[in-house]
Image (cartoon, rainbow, N blue to C red):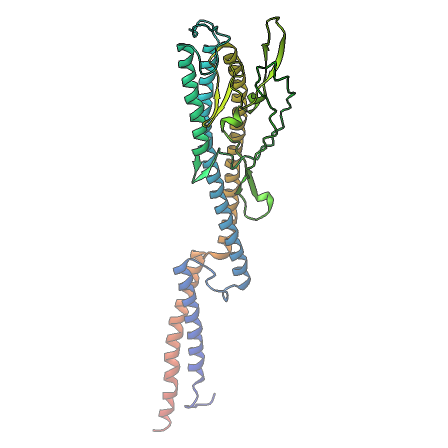
Length: 361
């Protein structure tokens, strides 16, 4: 090998090795300090693309789980309101059953079967007053119950299709001149609340939630066209009386005013009708509560599924993106040792040209 002084090939080789080792050590230090195996696209272009796609999926799954939890919270809130309405309806049945008993005082000149709504004895009037307050409270709950300012029972989420109640009009003269009318279809005009419970925008990742109105004019709608058999004249002829929401009559069991529906239990006949019909209403409310309970259970399973999927995909993303600390530390130690060796060899290579001076002496 020629002895030259202008080009120190050994030093160049040692310097290149030193730079390469320094770059490796720097990369290992970055991975150890960040915890990521991929810090930039240059580290692993395809791995970065896959990892970022997985990160978006994980974010979507986690958010969907939170959405489902919010939906479950809304259902719990709604179910709590309905529990109070249930209690009030049960109390109305109790009061109606009391009023249907013949032992209560009646107004002078009346009998328990002929007392008119709003004109009754002290005992039944006390029962009627409580019923009035209870129906008013049901309407108040229907108007004010909300979750995060979303009204629950005022009809905004009511999409129920209710069939029309057919009523055959009877001779108004036989009915004391009172006009009775049919009740048409009272279809819900609200819209479903849509819960985003999946990672995509497809219909399968959305869940519609509908809540029936709890307004008394909806709850007691069937009573607005119920049939009550009543004596119409002295010879004992009977006819089926069709009663509408606009009727105020002692046999109707129902009256409508500016505050909503008022149930009439001011006489035995009406009280019996109210007790029977309100039990039907209780069954309707129970059915909706049962449906909400089933939906809440479904959301619990949905959350478990979303959390499991997020966990598994996070694990898969970790294998692509995260640093294996033990392996990287081993590589760092190796690179650091090689760097020190390259530095020592570079120093030796830099000393090689000085041997030429011995030839010049």
